[in-house]
Length: 218
Image 1 (cartoon, rainbow, N blue to C red):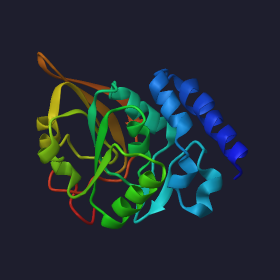
Image 2 (image 1 turned 45 degrees about the horizontal axis):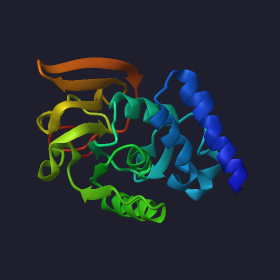
Image 3 (image 1 turned 120 degrees about the vertical axis):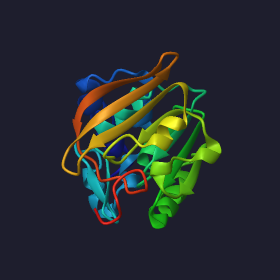
């Protein structure tokens, strides 16, 4: 894919798949329009990088559909000053999008090869505000908590308690909740009255594996 063709595909993706479906946050749209998604998928799938769907990235994991990335990012109500925790680094695409919008991103991946590849990819792109960790994402990352936003790029059977504990006042937690077949995208906001929850519709993610999520081998 040539540079001009890639830019046209990227901007067409934002126009038709994201803005056309109602995501209007200008910062989110600008981030999706600036991150070269084809660099976050296997070279053999680069031609499909801007299509309307998820793609495999190896190790049984996927890169999410562009619209879902945009929807989850917008649901965080992100601000430039925010520190955000992402659970499930994968290829690093979601972290790269967040890095264009917020001050600092901590991202946790349980599979060390994916984390290493994502870190190299983001370094190549000049993303200097992303901190990579390898570990059990269902535990969050307490050493850097609290976070203004927490985004979980994998499905949990219930909202992991440690993530709620690490959410700062005024912050949003976005997580797919459900069984291994289908989930509901769930948004939790911590405000002065406690926790307020809403849903953003059905979705389907790979499982979150960890102590507060699905067991290994599920």
